[in-house]
Length: 570
Image 1 (tube, rainbow, N blue to C red):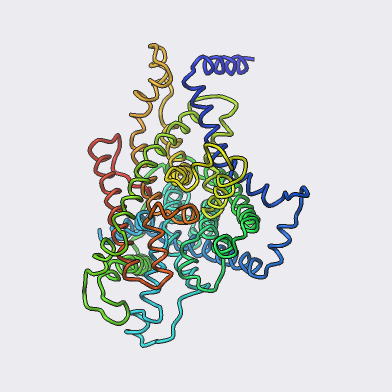
Image 2 (cartoon, rainbow, N blue to C red):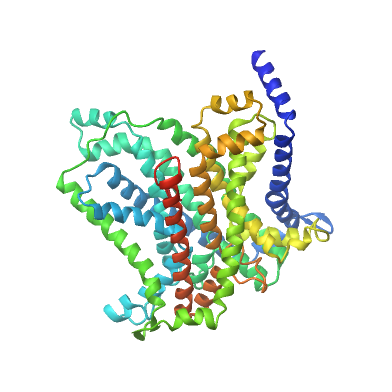
């Protein structure tokens, strides 16, 4: 009875606040129009024809041998990348949490490896792999004298994606290992169990749900990846590249929509398992922080091999990233290694680099504050307010995390170049900068929202209630009390959104028009042509921009924030 009265009082309080009600209504419309509607249009395109409900489109695309092969290829790559990334991530996390690292150098390596994939375009390692191990690669051709080596295809994609995604697993598993109570493992050691047996019987079962969670996150990222398979895949088709070629090469929008639904179904199923089962199970298994400090492993027979293995892999990954600026400073990669700055010059004189960087920078800079503010508002409503549509807002805002960029791009084409909004104000969005900004917002919204929810759950509600008691409305409370308390999350969301937007490729490659030049599209275009000098020059400048943005954010948070220095990868 008391619970019912409390809920009734909350509803009355909510409807008495027009600002909150208006915000909720605007959010529902935004999420419905720009996330649910494009996906619904894909389903309509796939299942409905002039004669009514039909499976004819699915039957047609499933009859295509290249599509069936793409499904098989995608699943193979996804599973192998998920397993490899999770195991390498676990190795790095275990070494950092359990092993006594003797040098600051090792700690620095781990930090650099964790942040590099965040601030780099998604296809940088594909460029490096081709330049180091391709037919004209420095390592294969000039060091090993192998002249016919090919990095394209299945193994090229697997290696590049593993090196790109394992830092994500590392960051996830590091937090889980830190939360294991050391007394559980020490009790097993006191009973005579070896360190390896303790790991297998105590540590591993505790982190198993988290390991499964890391696997599924990586699996989803892998099968949704467009840029790496496009550059290094060669003739090895994946679902993301097949969908892109179906709409740009075969001009079959309906067939591409059906293919997109298949890819969406796979990623959505995995996302639901990851989000609502494994993530919850992982949180339930490890609650709170460790009760005391962990005794770090100092035995040289353990520390030396593990440290060498992690250091070697970390140095290799960093070497691959360093390869990109050098690729922009050699006259002709693989043949003439005299240093030159002609490629950087041609970026701005011959290939409209100023326009590409200006367009990318402005569109990303517009989307970043909007995304950060929207994320904080959604987080605030989810954590601090009770209303019937709360579950809808949280679920739909997180849904974009499960939607591959290529699928979203097809949905926007079908939804805003035709569909219900084929004529009218929303049709005017297609082909404009506004549609690109909206895509950037939608793609970055889940990351910012998740960060905001975590931050808001740490704030005692009595702080805000005292402001309400003094007569402040919800907008004033949010702007003067809540937002200052979570400004670290807001700043992190701002920079993360900016970095994700300026390095995005899969969602926008189908939506960008000649009116706009975007850096990532330019890099992809030149890499496909084999013009690696120009591609590396664009990529080097882009990495410099994104890394500078992260450094500036860390400085701002260090001197003006509410907590210690943080980064988007944390």
